[in-house]
Length: 395
Image (cartoon, rainbow, N blue to C red; front, side, top):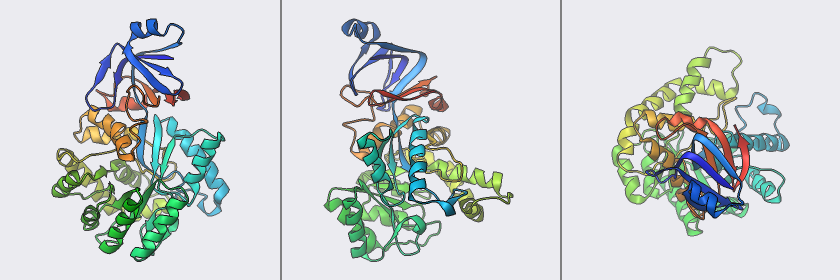
């Protein structure tokens, strides 16, 4: 199969190819070259043309919760079977946003591991899922209702071992909530990092406030989720240590907008009521991203795109929201696309498989109408999505 579009954005943050095409053989990108030359070289191959469109790598959402249930209006009735149906639907809806890989950073225990099993058996089609399985928090800590509560460095180590035993690819630690009180101690965070790295696994940490951000940097986590009140000096430390920042701007900014739109409604779900009760924090967070993102980006800290939007009826993996804020706050569009593709794949250690339009990579390909190199919102104008060379969504 030969795919042709007006332009190809490779995902490396700088390259846009014109009048080129991609040749897909089985599930891989087997060749890239001039349209006429590829047609001559592979005369029996079907050709799909997308006039005026852009071909780019399938997007990678680095912060999702496929099985997040507390915001459901019927949360009290949910059981494991209902959650599985919900999660499978969420995964399918991710394709409609151009997403071919997600990192799930906490869903109910065993859920994503089971979805990966079902995909492997051919029972369902879903994006590639890199999972932390259940997040780890201290007793009564942030996310306790859907996390594993543990206390003490050896309990943290034992829980990490159990998650990995059950199939987790990464580890997720909850280090703070929405106050300046850290939840785990430095000893516990250090133990988590040591244990995961000792067995070759990476860790993500929820750290949005001080001093938890600095504690996470000192411990040596691989990605810091949110980093809402990250400082310039800390961003420089992260760059030096190779720690990746997943800011999730939309999670806070869109939630603040959601609060303003819904705060007077009487039928809000529990999560919505919780958000309204924390209006001051979300306002402060939205302003922090608006005022600081560009300066933080300019430190050179590696940034990846993650959405983490979990309020009731929110769309799955709304990548255009997060990428739109990055554009609005001063990040160049090609760099944003890299942050949603190649940089994610590198961070997940799957860049040998995906994240870039390059020969030998899996044919995880997104076709959009328009030119997101100039207008990032065009990333939403989806024409077709391929996962390993197979169409999984058509706009």
